[in-house]
Picture 1 (tube, rainbow, N blue to C red):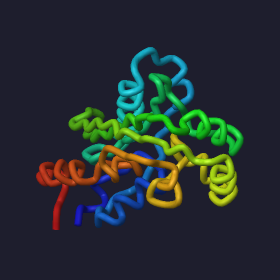
Picture 2: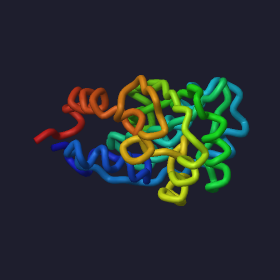
Picture 3: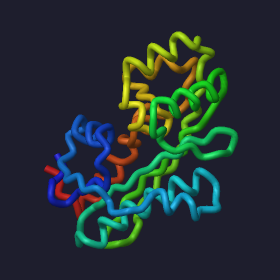
Length: 200
């Protein structure tokens, strides 16, 4: 078990917290004070660079306030034909996006970082490839009715660990990365930091 007062997740994401909880990591969850919408508007780089920038900003916003803590920051940007898609704000927007992605491939550009004393000391970048199946309009209507407003929780509007897996015909990439955190390489790095983080 990793000591609680040394690790902070710079996120209030339920899926990221669940991954750490299930892995037996003791940590604090602190929501970063970052204006994501403003940062996205002024950003000119690729979707991969956008995800990394947001993850770093989140981690650093918390790291500067908590000396000696290991701060984990993460972000995902859905990339479809090179364009970034944000979390759908409404069911109607989600429906529009799903119809756009139907029978096509998109990527979840994902970045996870660790900050220590206001400096990024580790980065992990992955881009799982997501092939959406050619589902019917009836399936989509029933799916959206069942999941309701939870469709606004993720960049793609789906949760592949639940009913959302039925949206796909093929997925290439790490499961944990898709749902929020690349837990295997993250745990490896936390073990390397055992001089900072106490491991029981």
